[in-house]
Amino acid sequence: MASNRPSVAIMGPPGNVMIPPGGVYVAWTDGTIAFITSSPALGAPFGPVAAIAPTPPTPPVLIPGIAASNGISIGTAPAGSPCPGTVFAAFTSTVLGDVDIFFSSSPTGAPGTWGGIIRVNQDIPGNGLDQWAPSMSVHPVTGEIRVVYYDRRNDPGNVRKQTWVSTSVDCGVTWTDCILSDIPP
Image (cartoon, rainbow, N blue to C red):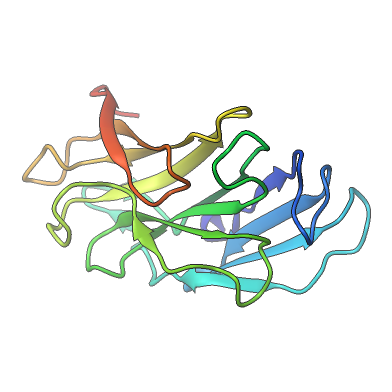
């Protein structure tokens, strides 16, 4: 099921108090909650599962016939980042009524350490225009976060698809949007 596809991130230097460099994070959603767990090394046992945030269900089909699901993508901040060792998660949610991309972070990924959710896409909240399928990358030196996703904000009919990217240089506190392509996927 698409809503259960996991995202994997390997911790780079400097690591954090829970997971050293080379440790692994795995995140997924069951369609209602985004989860994460970690292992200190490849092949080592995984620790407790942490809830990142609620993710009210994304409709399985977006108008007009686009297969969608609650997606998630994770990454970790490198030593050169303003927040080294931090764990990041970007995911779809309908918490504001339409499908949007949200972000949360944790200093360790452990249960109870995840911050509140921040909306990534910067169109008008609750406008009924969908953003979905986030894919996150974190620059290996600076820690700049980029989330690429599909977006229909430029079509009042919520039909025409574009590819957008949102960028954060402050550990996900603020985001700037930019269109990448107006050719649909």
